[in-house]
Image (cartoon, rainbow, N blue to C red; front, side):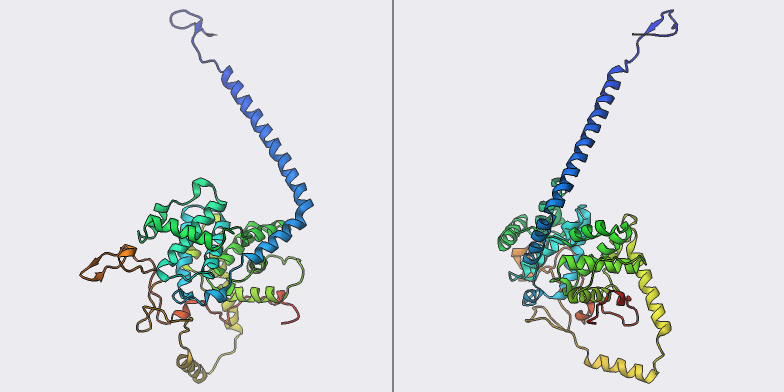
Length: 400
């Protein structure tokens, strides 16, 4: 009851909702929030003190893990059915699945690391290549992401157009874990990038550009056996150069780091359409468009400074290139090669993989998994343009 002005019936007392309990609840919630924030501040300070004390031991352990969990590209070369031209299609699929489930950035790099380590230890048939990638994604998501973000098998199977049975995902997941002896932990490129960004106080734009460059590197064999710490430092150096940011005074560059930096700069000209679309988003600073503008500007400058070539010499050079440039072929024969065209990386056949047979003939998959690459599949790998490169001379060391 509360006192109020006279109502129509002459009463000075009307029913009203008492706001006192709600005010008490608000005060209690505010007090809990303040106490929680204070606890987090104390925990962060204790973590910082412990990190400072054990930082050297932590980094020594991380370096050891980095060496122990690095894939060997030379062993993957020995695969008889898995060829390097198939890799970009699978990486595109993993990037789309990673984005669809909103997984953490380090989950993508851990997924590719698990995939490469498995392919360097086991023979993988091309019809299982995508299945191995899905199993690696499941393991990486369970290892580092929140439980509600981990993909469900039926969701991944739908993304694979129903090519596999649910039991095949579970069996492949267990087989990957047993092959790697349950050694999942791996210091990813994202881990080292965060350390360097915090130490150098780089902008969020530089961080996004470096992440874009690191994901471009996932498509190429050249970086399969490169240490994540070297990849992080090289990608951040390139990102600063592309965005015209000041250099970081982080010491000298050794031989491997300088080679990685130059090789990275040569693979930026033709990024995947899927990856470029991902990093065109506003929350990722639209770095794919900025990289394209930078490369176009560099190419224009190179064309202006390059001396003109005689027409006869240009025609002769093109003719010689057409004569002597033949498609590169990996070790071992690849089934399904006909007239120079390679079969897609994921083409299950037979009743075991869900392909019904009628009168002895197998039907194709319900939807295409990957497009058929061009005739000269080796040309899929982006090649460097000598007239449109990034000036990396300021990062070189005297051995060059």
